[in-house]
Length: 232
Image (tube, one colour):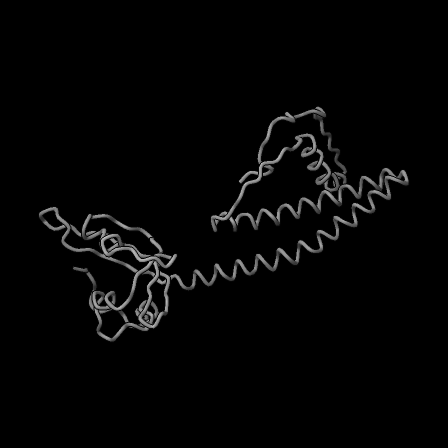
């Protein structure tokens, strides 16, 4: 048995039912017209679905993603919530199920991924060029003995690499959400990290007529220690 407040409202059902809804149809009748599957397309036995678990085992289901597939093949993604209702005898006598159409959320997710892809390409290309030209100018400055110019080029190159690193981390967050993230362990020198941080903020320090002093042993950190190159 299902506890429902009468027939399903037509506007909401027209989206969820994938064109399987008929005026006056109850939730029981609606569910008999659609196939319920997991996001990967596999179908669970009735007793393993949220409604079946609530009725047969008294289990609650919170925000489980599923797909409603109509007879014409139209698919609607939904979040399913189900909870059992107990009678006076302490046994499950009914169940309440709620279906939320998450099509708009999936569209937002698609647009976000598309945006990240475009931003990644549009930012990575010029940054790669900046890093390449900075390396060339750095080599020339060092060869000519122009120490101050070489230091400025090194700061430009470090800042560009830092920005590129941040862009990569934004994309990594998307991979983590999609459960496609891979960690690559690398060795790094702590002293180099401190130097890069110093080079990044030095222009701001000079702009305000301040002085930045970094004090670190050249062999800071263990060369034998292997750690991730970033924190996830």
